Length: 237
Image 1 (cartoon, rainbow, N blue to C red):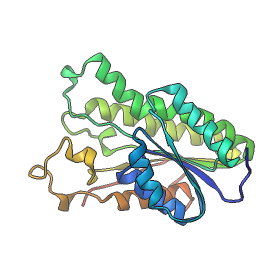
Image 2 (image 1 turned 30 degrees about the vertical axis):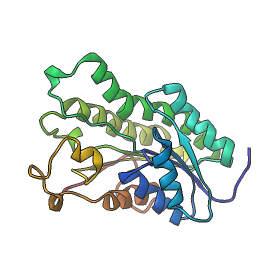
Image 3 (image 1 turned 90 degrees about the vertical axis):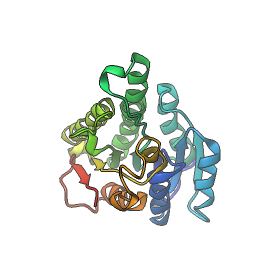
Image 4 (image 1 turned 45 degrees about the vertical axis):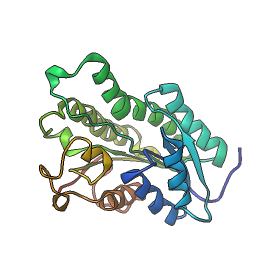
């Protein structure tokens, strides 16, 4: 284990979209990074967009594998000797009515959007509590409050993470831990366009990944006015 001077962060879903933009912003703030996602090629592309120091380590992992999810935190600490920020950004949002959502699909939705992040958060908290500080930010969704038809199960999984963020603040704020959920509306990403065509929602009405990433990073670094544990909504234009 190497103890570095730079703060260190984990970003899941770092291969594209919001996650890639979060990585760029944190790198610009001087953070060493562990970039997490299922596709190494996409993570390598993100790493190449972060030239110079501090370091950016690529760590392919599927957060539905809870052992692998927990191992991400161990890998970050082994690599950098510390963990200051965890951004749970990986997501999965199929558009399926509730009555058509089978057991396997419901399990996958919750595994990616809730169970994997919870597994990583548990281990990250153990590391952060020893340091007496740390930030955990989870990308959720406005669907947690008012799901678009077909996104009810996805919204339920994201609602769980809104509640968890508040709970973390309630339990650990006095020990130096901050937690936020950032709940954007529709964001112009591949995930959105896989389920919503532009004739239904034009790009002019969506958020850019950069806009959402800025809110997430500001929350992680303590630059927001919202109370610890808040869900920060980022509405569409």
